[in-house]
Image (cartoon, rainbow, N blue to C red):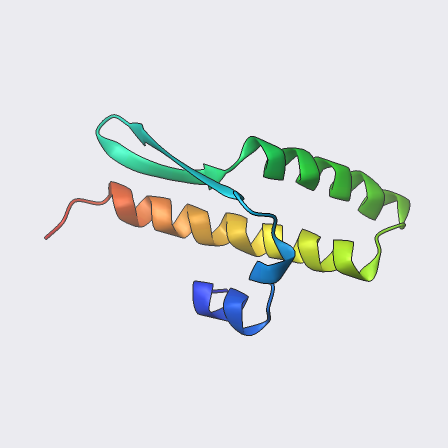
Amino acid sequence: MSIEGLASENLVDSLPDGAVSVSARNGSLVLKASKSLQDLFERLIERKKAGTLSDFESRQYRAICELDETLSRLNRGLRQPAG
């Protein structure tokens, strides 16, 4: 799903503030989930396994999965040389 897809489903609203961190590695920017988002995701995974996710938590879980895919694509794009 694209960033536009995340926004169109209002999944972005399910993510906490500060969900993405940006760092530099080997001269390139790296986008990744923040530590707090990673911790939230781990809690959601456990609740999903237990079958106890609320509707809002299900949206959060889905939004984090989509965000992870989007960040992976963006990072691959950032690593490719311009031209």
